[in-house]
Amino acid sequence: NAGVMQNPRHLVRRRGQEARLRCSPVKGHSHVYWYRQLPEEGLKFMVYLQKENIIDESGMPKERFSAEFPKEGPSILRIQQVVRGDSAAYFCASSPQKGARDTEAFFGQGTRLTVV
Amino acid sequence: KQEVTQIPAALSVPEGENLVLNCSFTDSAIYNLQWFRQDPGKGLTSLLLIQSSQREQTSGRLNASLDKSSGRSTLYIAASQPGDSATYLCAVSGTASKLTFGTGTRLQVML
Image (cartoon, rainbow over all chains, first blue to last red; front, side, top):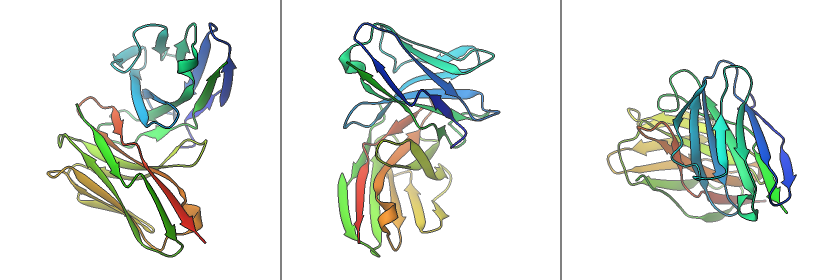
């Protein structure tokens, strides 16, 4: 689990700014998932990506949120025009070739976003 | 829609006690179930993964069981220690490959 690297660990943004959260999966893992944990709530699925493809974005808010996992480089979760309700911990997880269906998912330490 | 419930929401026990955490899920069509530990302000640490074809998994003082047909899993912690204090999360993986989490059990083990 220490292999999933997220940065930054803490991010403060003013309302209306953009937030970019980065996730480097465990080496060799080609499946990346993003989850959000609102204060005092459980983790909620946001999006599932494979290299250069969005597989499932059913948990993503319809506006202002986007995610990518390019062929080279980390996965990026981007939040445009942030609002206070976006304040949460954002976790990235990765799993190997077969995906979370068959194998263990490893989580990063999370990025804690605070919108002021 | 899969829903995962964990009982109790919070638990406080003296050191050395054996304890059981419960997890239930509404849709039995799962591929696996995973137990995690989350310390305050930290990420998730995977504790145990049980495939849908398995009945239980053990790691050290931890034992997790799975009854897929009844939609239940338990995490048994033997001889609890203060270092076990954390929030324990149960999550199931279904056909969509994503994990659905419970809201967790907050455990405090007292000296």
